[in-house]
Length: 454
Image (cartoon, rainbow, N blue to C red; front, side, top):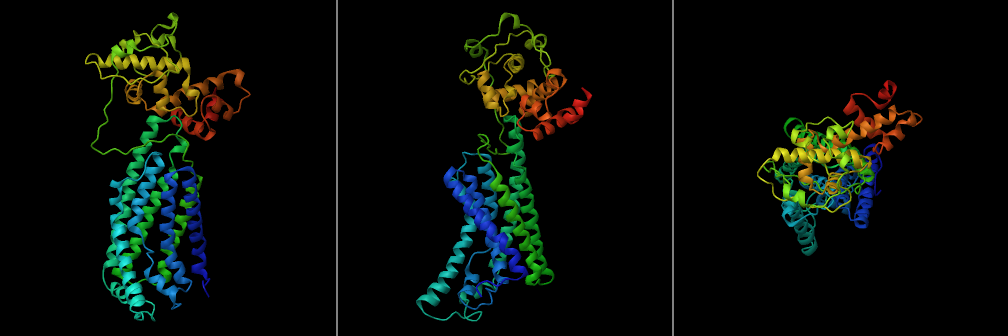
């Protein structure tokens, strides 16, 4: 029988087939839509599917068939832990940065995996190519199905060393990727007003699952090596966990949208400090702009009701506030040495007045770059204005306006017949779940609770 069906091989077979089929679908989508993340996920699924295949085919009788299938089991690179860590990390990089592509300097991450693959190729070439193929000599081990070099390698620490380094590699890359994920979460809050679909929370769960799964495999290996040898059935549960990981990874990856926004996340070295460019007064004065009517040329606190409470200095209160819409972006020049606090306050006032007049927060997918374009500045400076001048990150800053807009509509009898979903959409949210989460975060209660009190 080509494949022996039983409890152990039959339970692993669906996971294996799902991993291979979904990997093929993802690879086709990568070629069609030029999404590098799909290619990395396909590679990850194949790596896990190959690992699972060893125990699945073993329980299906391939080791005991004593023919070409048994020889295949001794030479196929089922264990690829050295490649899992880098593939996981580069999947994260390509998922969170649509412009990321593997460069020459990235290949060193795969050097250990390639070295181990080259060793297996040497073993196969000597045993099957030279010993059996060219010299025509029978394979001496395991009922004539295993060559001399492979048999010798089984009694050497090569495989154990490769697996141990692989486990440590996966753990190291997973921890590193988790740290990068936390930085990515901060990047989202600083650049996007709607982050629900961009957070990829399932990826964080996958990273944790990989860490736990690798730890479980390592524990199995330590028990087998130092405590008591485990039989094939006891080790089977480790491979069952791999199957569950394949299932979760494939379903989550297929449902992920890669073109929801122009993600350009770039992990920065820990020692790197981003510099902020302060726009000069001269350029701000010379830049053409659409100026608000004279009646609006008063302190912001007096002209704009219901603004979020932010600290604005006396310099801001005395400044006129030009409102700008749909004009080209101009990058501010290097800072003037004098009065940086006054400049920050003036731009804070300008931002608050623009938010009140143009109401850009009603656009559900408003980004920091789009708002910077409207104000004719760059994202670095606008981010500093929001963080320092308003005391919030971009996400909370914009969503504060949306929540206040929702509260206004809930109080207005004209909108009393609106559902909470309709209110959320009218206020700039793109889903009820996001509306509930943000409202709860900023107000400490759900929108329905707030509606009953208004």
